[in-house]
Length: 202
Image (cartoon, rainbow, N blue to C red):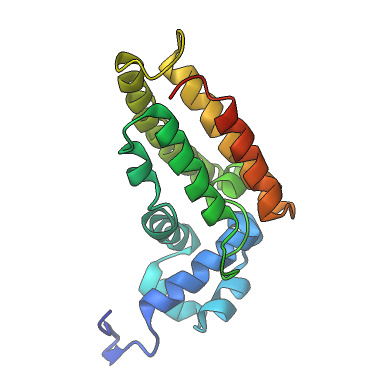
């Protein structure tokens, strides 16, 4: 990203790298648990520089959340494009495992959205509401995809698209909590394998 002038001088830091560092802090500590000192130290910038480049902490979190969805949850769209409902579930579960338990060990464990939606108090209610709203939009996409799968005959019996989507998302959130609590990749993988083994269709 090109340097942007602040009070007549170019920024002396890489904005993209600073945002990636902020994302790791939020992902590890949650929104409320991430102090401005934690953020500025990880980003290698001063508070005035943070405010000038990103706005306040709330605005910084929203930009970090955008980055998280764009890069760490890039598996969502390919999952929706799988030809069968079980293929959708399999691609989604595997992508989530790679997200929650980075094979390279570079990223924090768990899911930023789950951490934020469960750990935010009343002072950060607007942040929690936004994370939940983004989650609802993802649910809607998968509900629509499951409705198509029902119409295509992907299931062995009557299936409600909204219910099967909620089931899948509940499994994902449980896997995220397990990963954040220290479960091994193999342990989380077994949950995904069991879910697919019980999947009611193709």
